[in-house]
Image 1: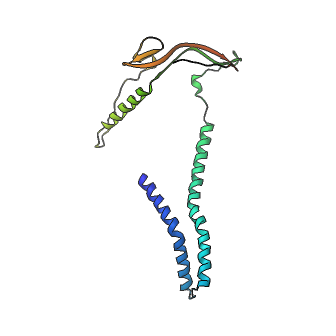
Image 2 (image 1 turned 45 degrees about the vertical axis):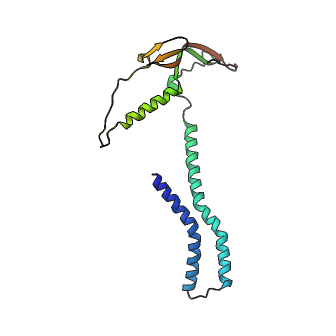
Image 3 (image 1 turned 30 degrees about the horizontal axis):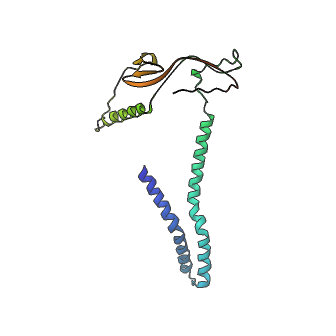
Length: 189
């Protein structure tokens, strides 16, 4: 794919720089083949006109490319802005019961891992993909699907837990209610 992009880019550069010269040569050749005599009085004004038109002619392919990229970008932004804000299957709205409450969490459990653990998981994934056979065979590795309650998480001190010897940070049984318009800061390590 990258070779095709480079080839198209080089072709565009070649056409941009050789195109105006080829147009000038073809105009003069056609003029002479029609039986006319090419003099300085005719040649210099034509060359000056072509020199003035060179930049706009060279800019046309780039402008077409810019327009295509603009339309693609606009479509991506429009698609993003028209997407649903939040997956509503995880959120229950109770505006009728608590109209003055902006955020309410009851018995919330949250956990996350350190960035180093994410890197380790990515390395493991790469190693697994590198072990795949190269002769076209497909290998499927199957493992049981774990639910969050079935994960091998062992409680430890404070707000962190240990999963397979590595710390995983967690918040358990969080209950909080934030009123609309309230200024709230959550501070911690």
